[in-house]
Amino acid sequence: MAALRRWRRPVPDGTPGSERHDQHDVYAPQCPCREVLDLLADKWSAPAIGAMGDGPQRFGALLRRLEGVSPMVLTSTLRRLEEKGFVDRTVYPAAPPHVEHELTALGHSVAEPLAQLRNWVENHLDEIQDSPPAFRAGWRPGGAVPPNPSGRSTPRGRGRRRRRSSRSPRAR
Image 1 (cartoon, rainbow, N blue to C red):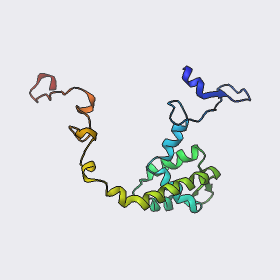
Image 2 (cartoon, helix red, strand yellow):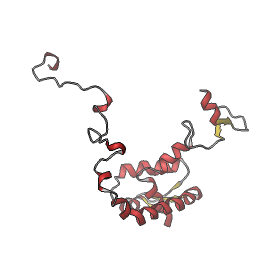
Image 3 (tube, rainbow, N blue to C red):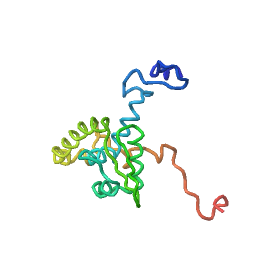
Image 4 (cartoon, rainbow, N blue to C red):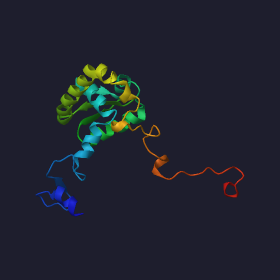
């Protein structure tokens, strides 16, 4: 618990239980920056932020623009972005309800570096895909090739287990 105190300090107003992050080091295990980085590096967060960069978007429009995302995953992603202050959700009274999602000032501030990353990936994709064939085939420094595709020597890191036959008394 002592390490946790190193990363948090009480808020000046003295409200019990309210704490703020006073040092930023994403490499430190207790740093709350990791949670934000995980959110922004999520498979659908960066594309969703990019899609909202042009202005408010309805859920259906986002769903169509982000091909391959399920409605449930998009809903979860938008909620997490809203919880962290990157997205505002506005519900307009209508039948059926009209809901729009748009970037906040914080969302717009992160959209720019994410757009630069997206542009970099698009510009360098051919180089990435043309990596040396030996490396793609499983080559490792020192010539070691992992015994199975997961890279683990045994399944799930445990010792090998024998399968029981269907005639085993324990299987009944």
